[in-house]
Length: 450
Length: 85
Image (cartoon, rainbow over all chains, first blue to last red; front, side):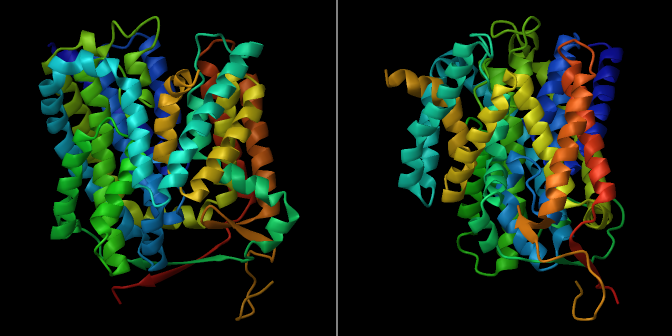
């Protein structure tokens, strides 16, 4: 491999890191919404496949790390992946420790990244022989995943009962769009439905505000009182193992390893499950929340990296929610990449290793340092100057823009409908995870019913 | 509206909780309108090829976000406690 290519990879990683550190801090930036289109543009512009992979790995690592910031300080999910952490972050925020949340999350992220890059590569090379077979069962795997996740919920029968109706809603809208010619028959509306699930609870609440009875029953508050305790400054390069205590480090290690092997499951849904499993025996709310946050963040990071590397290296079709979401362009971006000719076919094992390592190291070093050192300043700045209303406006505009671009004006109405249903399901306890898995399996589920 | 100490705070009885933070319904409504208009304006002036529409739109959304951040004040009351003292 020549030097100029390595230089290009480093440059691409550095650009991705800076770009997605900023984007990640801005709350409400969904991974798929912000990473997929940029990657798509780069693919179509003809970027070298190996440089593309470095860029992408840096992007997901940096974004995953910084999207924990809005969760910690404002309780707004920075993306789908950080949504499950909101409850625990709110506990720490209530105790005046939002910057601790950020540091613990960032440390969990680092552990997740360090573990998952080598482990994903090893795991992928082990399952290469079965890659084609696995690929032919993707629908069944997603369907089984939805059922499995539903059964792990508190309201399991409700979750289970909602799978088929939700699949019908998704396919119903798609067939409507095909039928009236809003999109060509070979285009499957995906991104905007994905985002519709993410902001479902917000759409539901906005509709509720139009109802006088509901509005008058909402608790009236004048201001949100927030207390920040200043922390001792950390000198030198902070070690994640110093920020996390022993049991948190151990939990993070275990959840990182789990994340690699469950790469095909919905990371958001699994993160919830992992969080509940690792904290079920801890009584102290602050300890419970910090352990959960470190463990969930390392899991999420690891699941994300494995979710892109394992399908890319071993299977060649996007058989994980990460690959179907932000990483879609690496598998399928006609005319450059198709299912018969994508990164899976174009890169050798060595090239996968080099690109992943360069991407991960650059992103983690820079972003972790910034996050740990300046979390307090970032917190204070956002609390003081960024109104919640503006964030909600930004988020809603981006979703409606993507809805419009996906299928035209009709899809704005479609997304509102979709958000109402998915927001209601979310409030009833049907997690994002079940909803995503159902969305991936929807065409297959519906084909079974005819 | 004032709190116990009689100092003015940014709030009135119409503030409600949306997604874990307090907002004023009126400001929220205007924020959504401002962001949507700026997004759609930016999208509509984008050159006519497939990839730049989204970029323009997102820039438009960010511009709307910045405008809202300037004209609306956060409904938060920040207290900083210095632990090292």
